[in-house]
Figure 1 (cartoon, rainbow, N blue to C red):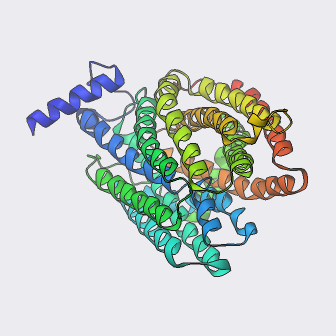
Figure 2 (tube, one colour):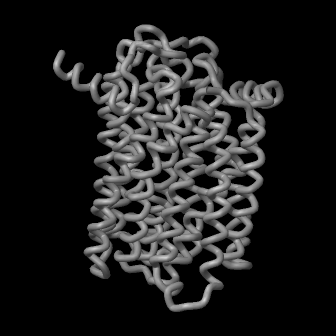
Figure 3 (cartoon, helix red, strand yellow):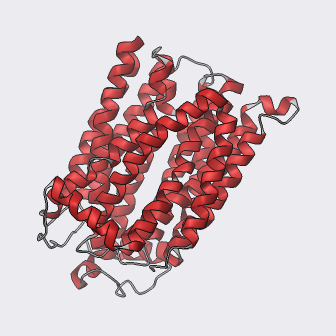
Length: 437
């Protein structure tokens, strides 16, 4: 055990660049003592979660699944809104429930296990389902998976704030994204080799690996050494909403942050439409899917640690820079449609822009996660996270439907230009936020 603690401390010091793990900010002294071990367990849990997210992606893998089973096209358009809003909308209602639990990691574990079960159901559907009924079952299973994801999300951030000190949280999330990017890179390379072979069995395999990832996430979370926290202030769902609305009125920084976060949805909404443009050029074989997964993995592996370090220095600046990058990527993606030459008829230029957009999307995610965790205190962090996520989930449903209508009327290229303008608004809004590090 002593040798294991020494190795974990060395890994911790190497990953954080901090040779004095005793210096902690914003967490109790006992939690500081456990931080090197907890850092490793957070890293392992995040690896499982991020790998599972990539291999069950509503932006890439699940659309391929719906195509393979012959589901109606309109159902495909519901995948991303359900995945995102289902994970975010209910969080304000469970914040009070989580608040009265002295240890929140068990909520995290329960959410991970439900996600693993949902992924296994999706794997079975890939093998046996078909048509409208199969598509409806996929959507229903995705609802359950998304609700469990929301349960884990709020508990994860609360446990992170209790066990990892301020100034190291962005670094942790950055390294976890890099490691998971390497794992998804391997999966994408295998898909490229498979090419146009029958895809039902392969997609079922990807979803089974995703289930294993969430099992790893739950097991690692269960081993985190979490000190019991305060349990006062638990509210029911409606009381939490009232309290949350009063926070939006009284805390101008929190209100401003949520406005910036809403505008930053442009990066998440642009990814599936950029992939759709590329898919229209290359067809629906597994080779094209593999290329997009590979470039996504490479982008995450290279970008996440850099964004993590940047977020610990200035999460506000990270959000601003990522928003600017989103505007550039959306404009580049749209321009490919109108450029002459046979090279624009290949998946590769779209994959290149997709990789760049994945890079800046990781900056969006790391910047706003780090800002939210650092802005809140131990007493109100769960409520802040839940309220912010619920508002974002509601906006995702509303804006997702509007965005889908724009794409139907004007095409994906025009939509990407619209999202580029939205990202510029996010850049200006993030620039006005105060520093919280």
